[in-house]
Amino acid sequence: MYITPTFTPAALERWAKITDDSKERILTHIYCGSCTTGRGIRDATGELHASGCIILHGFCPDCGGKVCRVVEPGEGVPPVRKGFTQKALTFHIRRESFFVTLVHSDKHTLEDLAETIIRAVDFDLDHCFGFYDKLGRPGASKEEYTLFADIGEESNPGDPGVQTTALVDVFRPGKKLIFLFDYGHDWRFDVTCKSIEETSSKFRKPKVLEKQGTPPIQYPGYKH
Ligand SMILES: [Zn+2]
Image (tube, rainbow, N blue to C red; front, side, top):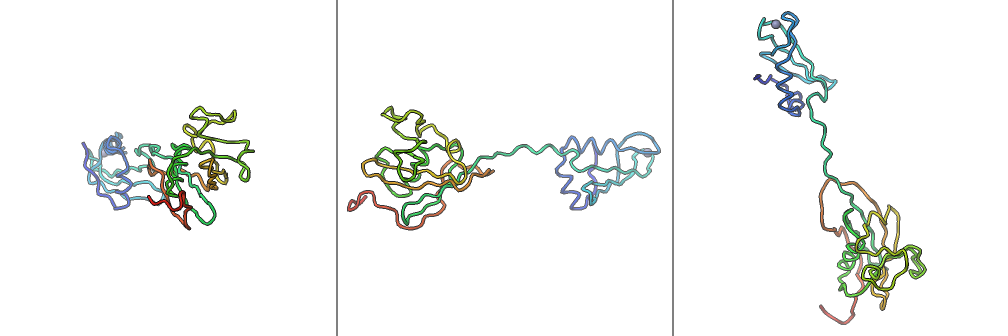
């Protein structure tokens, strides 16, 4: 057992980070030069030194002589547990004057991104779609990801599909693809990955950060 020293506020803040086991070990093993043993401490005070050490002053419980203990910075502090992090991918989606900023997590797929875009423009997700790297001529793309590949319809060899393709495996900051929705109508949206950043805040659902301009109308004249 030990009696907690009287700490200055700064020292107390540092002391609070030390595990209970370490606190006990420190306070019950303080070397007394007269007794030449490492015993406890009484009437202890603790202050924080500029170096980050806590300096404990007090008296030997056996002989009453002055004892002192320096608690090194980091001593008794458990290693920082690697906190939860996930990657946040920020996208700019543009079509003519319409513009939206989306954030997806590294758990999300190209299909998730497609759904977010379609929701952001208030379309119905009622057609096939794909992502292509040849911006002007999607058909001439070297890199493409289409729903056709997932559903077993005709697609180019090397098309990994959209349903299981993670966004982090496709995008890096600055990378641009065309999102093509509804091959009959040929809606095209520019998709640019603006950033990929570690974040400690957990999110499952994609987020729409901002929208500008007027989204296109999927079925003009038809009201939902
Ligand atoms: Zn002593």
